[in-house]
Amino acid sequence: MVEQDFIFKKVKLVNGFSSWESPSNIALIKYWGKYGEQLPENPSISFTLSECKTITKIYYRPKKEKEIDNFSFLFDGSLKPSFNNKINQFINRISIYIPAIKHHFFEIESHNTFPHSSGIASSASAMSSLALCFMEIEKQINTKISKLDFIKKASFLARLGSGSATRSIEGPIVYWGNSKAYDDSSLLYGTPLNNIASVFTTYQDTILIIDKNEKRVSSTLGHQLMKSNPYAKNRFIQANENMNQLKDVLIKGDLDNFIKIIELEALSLHAMMMTSSPSFILMQPNTLFVINEVYEFRKRTAIPICFTLDAGANIHLLYPHRFFKKVQNFIKEKVLKYCVSKQFINDHVGVGSKKI
Ligand code: DP6
Image (cartoon, rainbow, N blue to C red; front, side, top):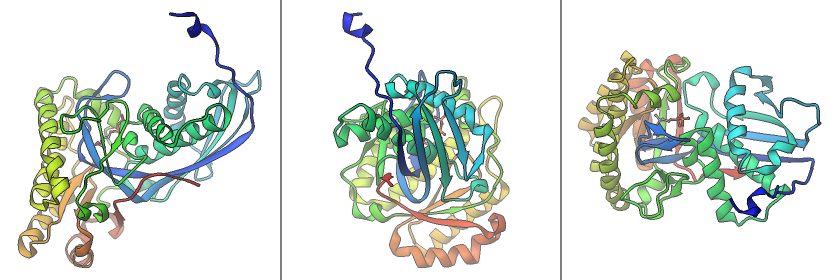
């Protein structure tokens, strides 16, 4: 260590407010398996969404000497003790990078634009909006920082809350993790893709709600199970190869190969869950009925629609904007009966987070 390392950063004590909204994302190449402090075993890439987002506000003030906690958290106006551990861990992790945190108290308020009990993963939008609020606070209190560095550091911090959150700061497509396909890819933060065929900038994602229940396997446990999964090594190789192949597909707008890669990725993710010990089947019978309807519809109409899955039973239907009406009719006629309370959400590729 050098002398400089012992010098404490001066921290001003300030009252203030910060507010950001950040969207969810849907992975095309899936992140499943991590090591160290939130580092991915394989590269991933996702569409940033638009409508499904989290809005977070933080009021902050100097922390009183005797105060033990340094934050309070309200979700949709109510206390949510079950979220506190995750937020606490996040704040602890990022306080090394944001010195002001240790000296302030944060009143955090958050809400999602999508129904809480829809089985849609909210950690990407929740953690990215939180990371952005804390970056804003750091900027207000301590630092002059360029727009580019602000975004990069927000993505870096978001990763420490939830891996997939690192890909939610910008849009329309973001990659994360070391990949031969992209020279500027990083393990530490997400990078937006510049060279994309225009069809993908307005791509649709209709989310079919097949199961509203809380996930039966947390992502944290799922990632951990990859450490002993006998197929893990090959899965990481496969994800790298799929990243390489997808690169050209995204540039050229090659929808046939897009469909092949995206569906293979979704099923490979679930294959990993099914072959972990303990194993999990997160698809429901209705997930399979819908997948078969998608195959049949695609064959009959030649409309380039495909499905992908999160770590759950819900289905994301991905398709070009020009087929919106035809796909909506397909949904009403063929798949609505498989959705809980006939519920689905029309979302589309978006540009990323926004200060509000
Ligand atoms: C299946 O980002 O939720 O959605 O880093 O433990 O918070 P943590 O995991 P998380 O994992 C996401 C898994 C996935 C695939 C993906 O988004 O790439």
